[in-house]
Image (tube, rainbow, N blue to C red; front, side, top):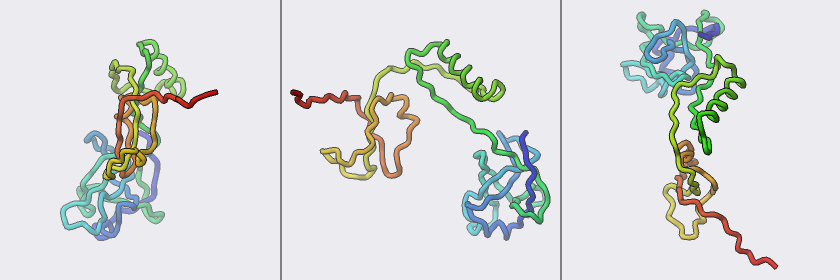
Length: 199
C-alpha cells in the first residue's frame, strides 16, 4: 500500500459545515467495503452548510462515497491539511485504472497476445494486468457520426450539425460522449464522392 505522511488536524462538525465541495479533506480510506488503516483525499458531495443533522457525505478521489459524523469518537473523522496538526498516513493516487475496449481488425489470439505483451513491456510486467477479457466479433461496418443541438429544431440543410467524424465503427460510438448541449446522430456511412467536373 502506497501512502505518504501528511500533517493535518481533525475538524469539528461546525468547521466541516463551513466547507464546500471544492475544499480538499481527508477521510478514512475504504476500498470494496474493506477499511484501510489510513486516509484518502476526498471532497464533500454538497456544501457543509446544508448539513441538517445526520451525517456529512464525502466522496474520495477513488470514487468511494462515505457518510461521516465528525464529532463521533468511534469514527476516524474528517481531517484537513494543517502544518500545526499531526501526521496521518494518506493513500496516494499514483496510478490510473484503464478500461480498454480494443478493436482489432481481423483480430485473432496472436494479435491480442502481442498487444498485451507490448503493454507489459512499456509499463512493467507487474503493472499491467488483465482484470477481465471479453472477445466479441463485431461487424466491420462504418457509420457517420454527427453532433447536433440537443433541443434545436431539425434543419433540412443540416447547418446545425458539426464535427462529422468519418470511418467510425459502431462499437466505438458507445465509448464517446457528445459535447455539452449536443447529441449524437449516427447514420450509415456514405462515401464522399467528388463529382466535380475535370478537364
